[in-house]
Length: 487
Image 1 (cartoon, one colour):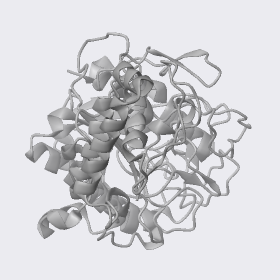
Image 2: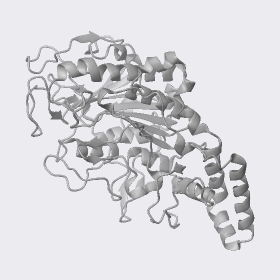
Image 3: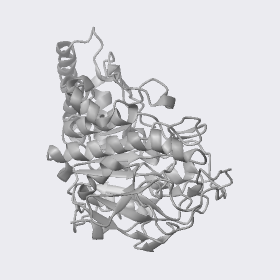
Image 4: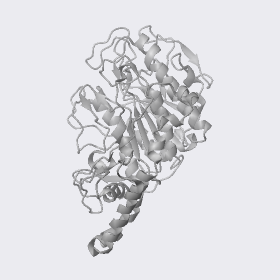
């Protein structure tokens, strides 16, 4: 049984009513259901023309979303000659870029820094965005969530939400081959009991939701992800490919005897989408991409035999197969009890050194190196970022949380992002933080600017107007493209 994210009975921009035709498998409407989803994904796909450095160079995007907010000071923006309660407990090390240091937590990344741009001046004023859910929503949609309190918000996902950047991209730039357009794995965005906020298509409709690939299991110990279930992408045993093709032929004969349906097919070019629907199921492209056993053991070892590492390997395979946007959410969510969380209010020196950083360092460096070795980095935009950084002063409370002197609180005023591939300058540092990593000293970058750059890289003008759930015009995102880091 193949389950495609649904349609909410909402009119598309061309006036066609979206129907809840979701479950694909034994239904006689198989072709129509998936075809309708694919047609809706292409509707109104043309955005406003744009151009400039890096425009349209990315065929796909891989977003490593580090939910929980990793400390920039303890990973990729260490500071010297600062008070002891600001200075990282981790040693700064040299990288492939002369004069640029990261901490000892990223030894592998230090050797591939010549492939990336570090943005050390991410920043925003936290009007209600000091806590995770609201900040994640802003980072992934470009807009502030409704009903934000002074310390954040805990509203569940809503059809009124602004869409995740991946949903907007696949709407305007659907894949050119029969492939899953947007995949989110291996765990949902989450803070405490709020699950999925910022991870849906929102007012675009469920046709543009990600394909949620959430393998079973508990990631408290970042256990192995040796197998990914692909049952959703397989035909039921009693439905053979030949039987499926006969159904497609029967549909065509019925259409020939139904002038009204025939006119609708011609008007909306439905045959094109029937073909894509059948192709997605029959080609096995998605099933093959998700089959990690096809990778040599040495490649799987290179990424790390853990959930995050194998997810990064899957992202590379999905991109090769034609998926436009892959979002990998750090598997352990904010406010969890897991020892692999980035939400380091305490016990940071031991947890980051022995758990989170080694997993991240291995996976990120492997992904960048693997893509580059295969000649894919030039056409793939890789982004690694969290919703904020951590406070320069250890033990300081900035969000109402209790922190000890081995932890840092939430800090949206200054943090770091990493970009690579698809026209992004190699071996470059954009922006600069001040002496203590408290605020940008040069070239501040708002999350909206980062998203604008992502849209620009895939060939979409970030100023393109879309209609929300009230049919009101809204820009994809309010931000400036960071042309200074593109070539």
